[in-house]
Length: 127
Length: 115
Image (cartoon, rainbow over all chains, first blue to last red):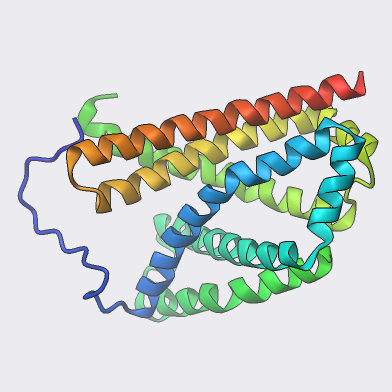
């Protein structure tokens, strides 16, 4: 069902692989994705509580106004912006845009740099 | 689609859902940056608007499907013993399904609150 029969070489030891910059961006895409999946239940719980009634809405408003939540929101937006920009980059690669060497590397650096900057900007505007 | 092509199907799902998320996430962020709901009435009014509730439910479905394909890829890469792999994937599937039903409940609840 899930197993494969072929004996193609697979090397996935994260501690031994030396990643180029596009590889660092790529593993960031995966880590940010898995991290955001872990946050889904919490986000639904916030929406649930705030929809349940005025008291719940007030309680959630208080939670999201605090600095621990702002820090959480910044990290969440960092993960999101990274995943979002890297995702656009992958979609463009699918249609053969940015496949060649200088652009391939430059867009990877662009994603790595732009993500935290955008995250900080959005968190700042929401505060 | 044949079993051999299931990887292809996952690949397509990942991209189709990505395009929906590509448009819906900026809408959500812009909504909460420019015009966040001020109170419970405003929140439920927004969420029970037909366009928004359908858009949000589609968004949740796209997000969970996108999450399923993405985490499944990571699990297949890093969890090799078949028992552990099946366990993790089953747990993930149940958790994502639960999230979907929970979100559905919240959207319906918003509808009820407005009526």
